[in-house]
Amino acid sequence: MKFGFITSFGTIHDYVQMAREAESHGWDGVFAWDDISVERGDVFDPWVALGAMAAVTERITLGAMVFSLARRRPWKVARETITLDNLSNGRLVLPVGLGGTWDGGYSSVNTEDPAIRVRAEKLDECLDILELAWTGETVSYEGRHYQMHDLRFDPRPVQRPRIPIWPVGAWPHPRSLRRAARWDGVITSDASNEGADEEISPSVVAGIGSWMNDHRGSSDPFDIVVEGVTSGTDPAADRVRLEPLAAAGATWWIESRWESDNTPASLLQRIRQGPPQL
Image (cartoon, rainbow, N blue to C red):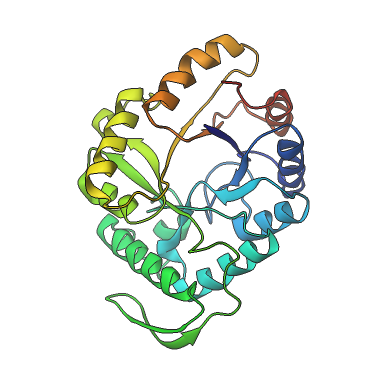
C-alpha cells in the first residue's frame, strides 16, 4: 500500500512546503483539491499549485482529489496534463469525479449545467478526448458535448501508455464502476452507506476489487484508492485499521483531513510524523 496526503488547508506557500516535506518524510503522493468557489478557507487553482509542487520535489506522485473535469474544456485539460506530466518527469496521476453543486463553479454561473447526468456525460467525453490527445497523433472527436477536429498535442506525456486516471467509483453502482474499470484505478466511495460519515470498509474494497476482476477484461495494474484519517501517534492502532484494507486489495491510502479544526500547522505536524508503517 502507498500513502498520500491532501493539502486541505493553508496558503499556496503552505501547499508547496507540505509537498516538499511529504517527500522528505517518506510519503508516496501529495494531492491538492479542485474547486472554483466554496464557503470555506482559501481556494487555489490545482494546476498552478501542482506545478509549484513539482518544481520542489523529485519523487512523489502528484494529483488532486479530485479534478472536476465537467467544467473544463478537454483540449485545455490535455495541454495542462501534458505540461504537468513533463514538468514532473512523469509523476502526475489524474483522480477525476463529477464535482458537486456546493462549488459555485457549477451552481453560481450561467455556463455549466449542474445536473449529475450532464456532468457525467461531460466527464466521460473529456476522458475520451484526453486519451486521444495523449497519443501525440492528429486526432478528431465528435461527442454530444464536445467536438474537435484535427488537433495534435505535442509533446506526448512522459508516462506510457498514458497518464494514470482514477475515477471515483460509488459501490455498488455499476455506472460509476464501469467508468473506473476503463481506466487505471478507482477512488472508492460507499453509496450503500449513504448519509453515514464512515470510512470505507475492507468488505467494500474487496467487493470493488472482485467487481473489477470480473468486468475489466484486463490484467494491467489497477489501483484501489481509499481516503481517511490516521493518528500518526499510535502505529499499532493505525496498522489494525489499514492492514485489513491492504489485504482486501487497497493499493493507496490518502490522508484526507477536511475537518475545520485542521490548520496548516497541524497538517505539517502529521506529514512530519510520516506515513503509517505496515
